[in-house]
Image (cartoon, rainbow, N blue to C red; front, side, top):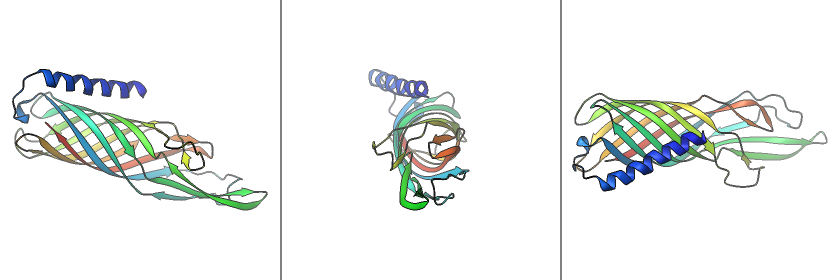
Amino acid sequence: MKKVMILCLSVILANACISQETEVDTQSTDKKWLHGFNFSINQSNLIYDFPVIPILANPEPELSNSLGFGLGVNTEYKATNHFSARVSAGLTFNGGHFTYTVVQNGEPAYERDQHFLPITLDGGIHGILTLKEEGISPYAVLGVTARIPINSSDDTTKIIAANGFVSADFGIGLHTPLTHFNIRPELRYSYALEGMYHVLIPEKTYMHQVSVIIGFNG
């Protein structure tokens, strides 16, 4: 997954440099390479099969999925009037939590709340199929995103530090060209293809996610 992240960042930076040295038409619809940024609001959907663990008073811990957000940059190559390929990189702040009670000497001792993957470094590769050649047009997006956890604290009682994973992304959006740039609102569902592990969670935990993304490029 680190190789995927390096590839995404390299392509974005290389093409950003090329765009500064190459004279292009001011109309974004005539460009082959488009560069931009995006921000998103996401809703985590943690799925797990929690086993019975002797040190926990409640084998079924409370699970909460709250809102998060993300920031990123992207580069897109328009292969045809209807198809383009996009690479992206960014940070996502996730909102999933586990809450459970730890047992010591046979008695409930204390309650612990753990923030599951609070921050991830994401790198994605997606294909975009646009319905219309010009003007406002709906589009479909399909691809994969590699997500690498970044621990925001060394306190392991508050953060579940799990391994990274890859998700398959499916979405729809609306390409909206303006005079000097494009706006692309997008609704995306990310389905985790790999499970994650933690010392207290022997079974795999999958973090799916629904995101509303607002992108700008030109």
